[in-house]
Length: 143
Image (cartoon, rainbow, N blue to C red; front, side):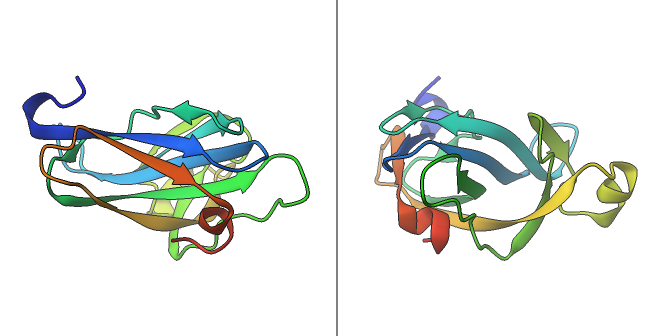
């Protein structure tokens, strides 16, 4: 599916020396449901690259997604400091629709709000794969 119908796939690489745990958010605009959605957790070892299955981005255009990340071992365990508050399950894998709405939290008191960071993606014409190397700056300060 990579590169089909004029879209690019996002890959995430852990460029740190410690493992990280990451979740993602995006605005779903297709299908029978529309709204903010969060999805996670993805454990990524140092040097590992994953395909988290984010929605494909239009080739040659700008796009974005949101992320929340933390280190899972080592000396640095800070979490991202974003400004887009969305819901996550703090313990288990999750896929949350309407992750930015208070009534979703009311219906699921085990969910927690987390400060997601918006990640801008700038694609070149006909670029079919976008690999983002997550560094310590992405964990501590956003982009």
